[in-house]
Length: 227
Image 1 (cartoon, rainbow, N blue to C red):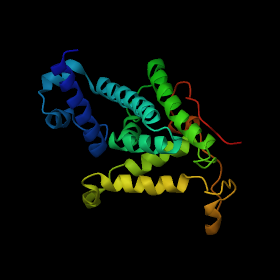
Image 2: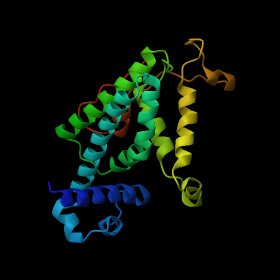
Image 3: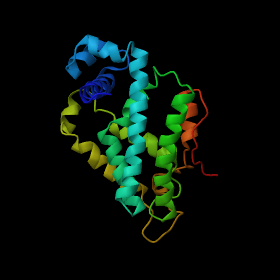
């Protein structure tokens, strides 16, 4: 693909991610065209319909998610900072929130399952490494991490969005959440802060459970579920 064509494609995908997050998967494609600063013919030449655009966006997001996990592992020898680096990179890409929105329109097939499997495997590797090193609570599952990122990376509603106009607030909240996921300094594994409020934290949530709950077809990607 020529460099100018790739730049146009990148602008369209980035604009589509923003528009679908703000207005949902039924947002008019004209809004994507305006946000991307391209002509309608440019969009439809690359993505003939909404389904093609949504599919390309999900593949792109999952591919970038895999790359972010692999880059975090290369850049950080300590597994917990590597996991933190990945979570913040994923937030900058708005992956978690965007994929949840796009699931409403996505038709899952073998190709998408394979792309999803690659992303989950890469992120699961970061999570397991942090737990094996004693840096991350052992009762944190892949599903917990994914849904936590989804909750925190969704745009704030209405006027509250002004509080995070520069995107820094989501990173502050992610760091606060990650501090809560860190293993106890003394290595204790039986601490449950929820007991102070009269409730149990429960078991780890696997990614396969998230996929099943979303009602998505296809072979579930491997998740980690505590017994």
